[in-house]
Image 1 (cartoon, rainbow, N blue to C red):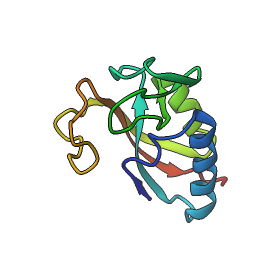
Image 2 (image 1 turned 90 degrees about the horizontal axis):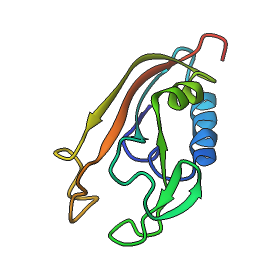
Image 3 (image 1 turned 120 degrees about the horizontal axis):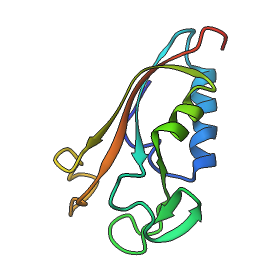
Amino acid sequence: MVSTHALLHGAVRDIEALLDVIARALKPRGLLYATFGSTSDARYGKGERIDPNTFAPAAGDEQGVPHAYFDERSLRRMLERHFAIDSIEERIVDDVVGSWAHPQRPKGSVHWMVRARLSKDQ
């Protein structure tokens, strides 16, 4: 399973629910490659607060779209409910944010890049 944007958008509880669905859909030991928002992102804490770590921009091309942000500890805790983490890396992604998604690329974008596999006991 590959997700480059679906797990960036929505409230934290929505991301958790999506991971539950993904875990049920994957075959045993199935792989997950995913991108998650980081609390190091320049947009963290700005816009309308949805929950402690979810914010919706007040302007721009993603106005009103909730974005969930995670520090490493909270991301690991959420993922480890279903997955064994092979790698987790925080990256500045200003140069790779798709112009197809953002006519004006945001500055200071930081995402978690994750490779994980469904735990054996799932």
